[in-house]
Image 1 (cartoon, rainbow, N blue to C red):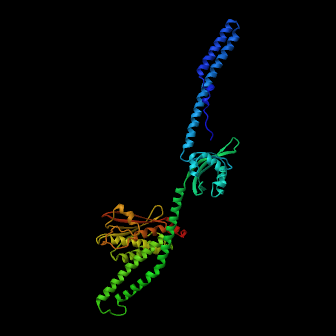
Image 2 (cartoon, rainbow, N blue to C red):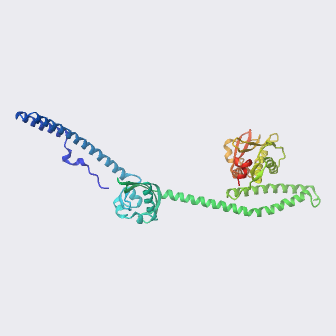
Image 3 (tube, one colour):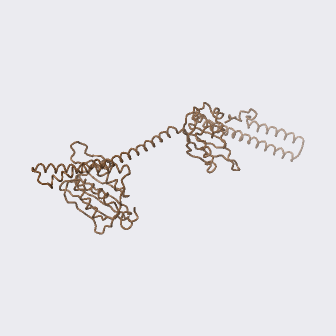
Length: 449
């Protein structure tokens, strides 16, 4: 931008308006006195008065003009200071791609010592600046359509030859006929931010790939893990039940029972780990079909007693008119079985475990597992819902388990489009609720795939 010129620096224009007014009055009085002495008449005197008034008005206008010039000059100086010392790069370019004015910040971003060097060095923005020359055409198209461009991120060439990323915000300046005169706006160097975001995206993508690879590996290992374990369970069951004849010693039968019990527990843990891996990798899907709440509850109770090795009664509170649910019976009963097993595990012998089913006014269904067990503190609930989290971290834990039941139940509820919530207090028991949406209930369930 050209240097600013202060119009008040002109000596002829800086005379005092008061002096000019006094001089005008003096001259008018002198002429009036001569007129009276020469008997020139009233019209002459009136004319002199008019001339005097005009002279006074002109002097006031001169004062206003001087004040205006000072304000304009001060404003221009203030703008110039802002332009030169702004943190962001500021530019003004022609539509064809020539810089008209830039500030020092923009020169620094592009790698030039001075703004003048940038203006003379970059004569074609499209060809010299953008790595992808089509970006300038996109910029012009946006300007033509909207008169403004925001957060226009592009890769450009630094003067040193390296590539950097910038974000432009600009507007179009048009004349009275609507023709674009120039573009003006700001530039920010977003290289560091862009590289961080790109590195984060790459890391997230790699993490997703790693999770899928882990899930695929564990799924492939399922057969390798389960085949020998099934053999152990099968043969220990044969020995325990003496299907091929007496074992000859009572202790051997007890040992076979222990082997079968431990093998069953190990198989449960393996299945839970594999389910967690499939859920994390997005490989586990549901096979929805009509199922009654009573049948789901019965299957869940059988699973819970097998997991917890506890045959205590579980109170059922399921209305006879509960509608049919359109769910995956195996997976939903697995979720409920995990919840019931936890309730049995953490509830003393004299406590109660209940399974409750209720329709809700919005058409959804709540499946609730409630116990009067030891409960947990509110601040530990979030941790309990995470996989592999054991609230009792000591080696001599009172309660066995891998800490996967709650997290698996939560994920399975969400696969059905529902949600799992938990309320608990130390010494007052725990209530876990699975909410299934109305689309899983009754006649509307047929619409859900």
